[in-house]
Image (tube, helix red, strand yellow):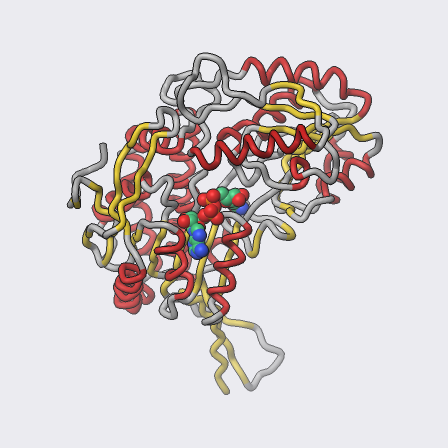
Length: 487
Ligand code: NAD
């Protein structure tokens, strides 16, 4: 299915280091979650491979870091064009590896193209901005500002949006002039292997981009600890994010973290009910709810609650769950058995805690294999239950009522996370006021979860450290240098 490259005992080579494909030792079994069949084996790496990749990236850094922004921009454009050229194939691959419907995989791949194109533009603009004069309150000194790349950066990404989370880090890192060691998720390495193949064809100088597939322990840990890595950008769970930060602290590396969420959709009394139901389903069931930005808490004004629940139940039950490769399927499979069991566990604990199951909570009829789950809605969820407080990462919505604007805001903000929020209201002033009061990095008003490379991604509290996308995503990979000269 993938382009040919050296194989090791029938496994795909899982290392791309210094411009060459290599086979590692450990074999990762990559499963199609919709069929539970083996898709491929990938020969991944270990601490030695990480060391080798960091060395290759260090060797490539002086030239790449000094190259003109316009040259780096041209490379990013070639990568964007390469992704565009393999768009259909990548959509299929993404869908097969992660179980998401083709329609969602299409959004992912288009986002990847847009991200590389956007950072190409930013890279091209850098040359004119370099050495800009800085105004000082003195006639005796002159100053100029330089933005220089951090050095070798380690990028560690999860399985829920494999190519997207990679593009959000890789494109700005390359634009800034950093060289890179990327570690994809061991669950979904196939899209990134294909991306590496595109990069190999793009003419990027050898060693600028390196890829080491493998488990978190074998590859992620050594990458986080490697003294040759100047900065780590991590997307994943909070538990692992903390470990990565601890390893990074040993050599005082910069870290950017994109972690979990427990976000809310707030439906006010004057909301358009059909829109509210669509947005609740989108925020809860897109990617089978395996989104850091899932609005898994739905807060509804008392006045609307009854009618809203009737329509939400009907819409949730009408969602077409099934083979993600079949056009028209709206929800695919969860990514693997571990995640499937984890979500079931949350459902069982929610029932024990006294939450009321409105719909779902079981395997859909007619799908005997694959990690499928019916869209699930709970009401009366206790505020202290894990279902209400923890990230579920599955197609599970928890609905609660509110009686005032203040109560809605309080319920939404009562979380250790603060990634995103959605507001549904016919009153523009109320919606803007509520958006300002919510502790979240991104708030949508009467809108689905649209994402633009120009707008920042990241959250408050334990959801993030730093911001991705926009100029902030680029700055995360830059050092600031002032040069002050006596006149
Ligand atoms: P995870 O934390 O298990 O793994 C993420 C990555 O870290 C993987 O590549 C994994 O191999 C690696 N890893 C595991 N242990 C490691 C270690 N000890 N040292 C270094 N690396 C290690 O997360 P996941 O299950 O792949 O993804 C789901 C999580 O990602 C969810 O919590 C979700 O909220 C989060 N996420 C956040 C965002 C965001 O933008 N905030 C986006 C997507 C996913």
